[in-house]
Length: 503
Image (cartoon, rainbow, N blue to C red; front, side, top):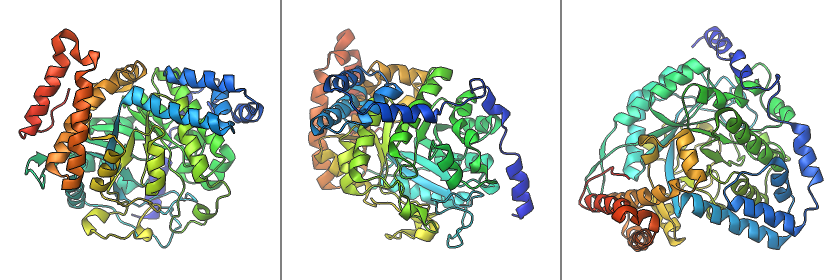
């Protein structure tokens, strides 16, 4: 594509007036002075104050900026142990005992932006540029299905060749793919496509909504304005702070009621970014009555052509990373919390114990990397370095050994439990009960369709335990056990070979 054509396209992307309706007297929700005041003036909290905040979180109420800052400043090891215990207790209370799995599918690394931390940056001459054809998208999807996944998050660089029309075409292609599961031979397909893409105007977001997406994910990267400007050069689309800041507000205005926030930890002080995420969620609650469905916590990792990715003075240690995950779990008790394959297995294992609800597995982030079956990363075709390349079966087995069931549930999307509906159920600790049922059903599918003998043996024991808990839970036994009986009927159908049943 000619440079002038790309420039003409870029000039039409940003529509500043679409942000104004969400701002208050022209101001956004990131009050940097207030953030730093909260961090600096809440360093001497008593144990009683911290424990009161923990109790508020355990009642599934979001924390204020000041309350979050008090937790960020805790230094007492015993209090951190209490915070960590509360984090997993909150996750158990809201989402029950399961981890949801998904796979990323990178469709294009063409990009008009020049972000200092990213391998896709336009000035990275080492990057091998590529955009997948629909046939290639189909083959990538087949590989992902053959591994056992039911959820995909599709990722696109910001470029006119990968605009919303390309996204809609590739999403529909993914949904059209069917495969025979390797163990059972049952017909399987991707049940939900989520999207990680650039900010868009409301009209384009309506096109994306019509394509059948689940969650729309846009990370602010950093909420600190000066840092944002430094890592997103002027003159690029991504340099517009407010266009990105209100991308998820516009998505909700367009009817996409499941949205996902995140920050790239390591660009600026991690404590500030945590407060940015809390403020972001609060502002969506203010405007729409519903916050983000999920919060992601990626840490910066080395990227091709990026000195910053290795040398940022704000790189987050493992200990601080565990702290920020625990604090986010307490500050935002009902959104899902995603840990990704950027992290190495050991730290992923520890962070899952701090209340994470989702993770990716068998992850490849090169363009066309699944079908190429290269066991090694090719950094010059990827956005960043991943730390965990293990197979889905290996990670499911590990999660099982930790006593957690694996879930591929997409029932909420298809039952209309999205947006304010699912958030209301999460806040009242009801959605997690259905999560438990549907997790068991999809876990049964995985064990019969894909699992290795070792993973299946662990899974069988876990399912027996989970069904026992379900049978003893009064919620499921109301009205002569109507919900329990429906669950068990579906469970027996799945054991007999039926697929894609949910409660």
